[in-house]
Length: 167
Image 1: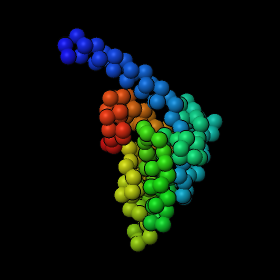
Image 2 (image 1 turned 180 degrees about the vertical axis):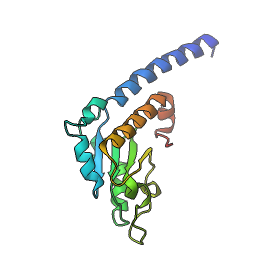
Image 3 (image 1 turned 120 degrees about the vertical axis):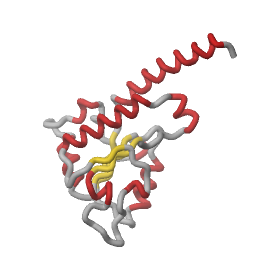
């Protein structure tokens, strides 16, 4: 393969990445997996005050097959862990995960045999949101981090691995 064809493929891929990533970035379909008080803060996020639709995540989905952003909000018990894994597995690629709040991120103040000490033991997490319960502004910040991550992705990387990487 000649140098001209390699440069042509690179330039085309770069433009294709920009176009596809722009579309993905501003058309996220979040699915909340709310198990505790953090889910209440998510409800505030979709209200007119904070208006998550400004960031392209307006249409909340309650089916994993129609979602590409999973927001785990609240405590996850070991009995819920297989359900969370199944929901994650049912989501189409590419997909991203936000761990919202102290309980989802690290088990919170529940240090016992029944509580998962962080959902990253079950599924890969892209962005962690600290707090108990985090404010809607923190969730918007996490959404912006997901959008920045999408900007850095390449169509070639996704098609070769058929999966997204976590940071």
